[in-house]
Image: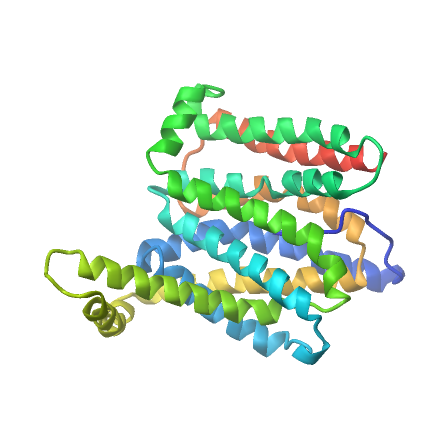
Length: 333
């Protein structure tokens, strides 16, 4: 989930302050690794669309309180439009893909598909750069990381294309959303740094994600209500969705609301820590550490969701990390 630059420079800060800032930045990796499991827990309690909407509502509020954005007048308009659209699409697609997973185990698989974004980012950066042999250097890591996802999704059968295809074909939408989100974030990471001109729009984009998720929730509820055989119109279904909201929220236990809060803290807190680390710490060290995110995320999700993962799945997760590291090493040549 990190928007690292492909050309990593040294931060001007040095000494203890830079070390502390780097440590804060690395906390984002730990927080984001908890995100997938927590989002799944919330979705199991509140539903695939209402759960993410609640998480990002809480996350947007936390960011506006603890990381208030600079005035919009200072933000480049192109960055707000293009960067905002990519950010909203990424966050929305990832949140919905986890909620739409058919099982807790499948949600872990989908989260690993999302972690193809570092490889996609390197491939895109290589494609648009003018460096010699940039694309050939990026391909080996991409192959390794993609093989890792196939091994994981294939389960105990490993690189069995038929099993992997069956897992995806039985519930394709979350896999497609996760991959599309990974691609969108790769584009965001490559394209927006030059557009932003130092402006961080995270706290501006988060409320937009929130609004999008609420719209998706109510439209989904309205369409479902109009097609349930009761003869209600789409408008009546929308009114019913608004009317049922209070009941949906009021019947949930305290533990479900704590999951919402923790998920929001993991996502919003991760962005806050990462932003601070980028500004005051070592981006190169943070970038290297971020390649451990797939493994940390898989481990955290397995614990939170009580999922027993097979050896091939762990092998696949390691291959995703290895592919990202291969890309990083080759791009430094």
